[in-house]
Amino acid sequence: MAMDRCPIYASFFGALGCACSIVFTVIGASYGTAKSAGAIFQSGIIRPDRLMQNTLCAIMAQILSIYGLVASVIISGNLVEKMALYTGFLQLGAGLAVGLSGLAAGFAIGIVGDAGVRASTQQPRLYIGMVLILIFAEVLGLYGVIVAILMLTRSTLNVTECLY
Image (cartoon, rainbow, N blue to C red; front, side, top):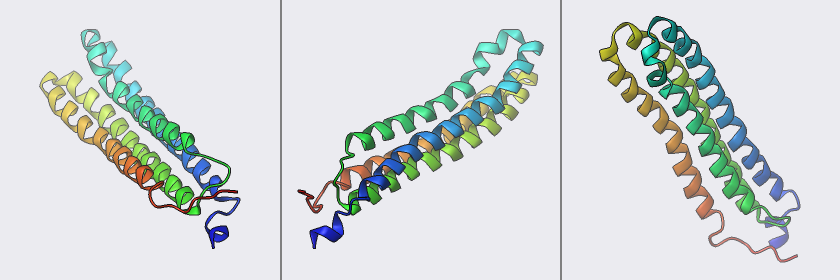
């Protein structure tokens, strides 16, 4: 019975979760940075005094890649040659949870950052509103990390032990 639960390919799903975690969050972070960078540079021409203040959206986008890195490190620390299929599936699910939520958050940060920087350059009072919306977008990635950590802690509890 333990043979069905510990197939040789179970660790492949964990490795796939590890890769999905970092790849999708980095895509989201790079999109968020690239999309908002055009607005940041344009606002730097109009209002050079606000250039550093407007880099907040690019910084928040890069935090998403840290979320993916944390999840990937946790998953890779639990990868072994023989593991339960249940563990591999939960590791894949955790990687997809943090990766896809980081991707969505990166898209949101990029779009909000682009529009927000352009608007706050014209009307500086809009900056606080932009920051609040960026925080809401960033939290989407944080939700994925929380779910991933919960899944990864469950992946080793009451699991079939693969001894061979």
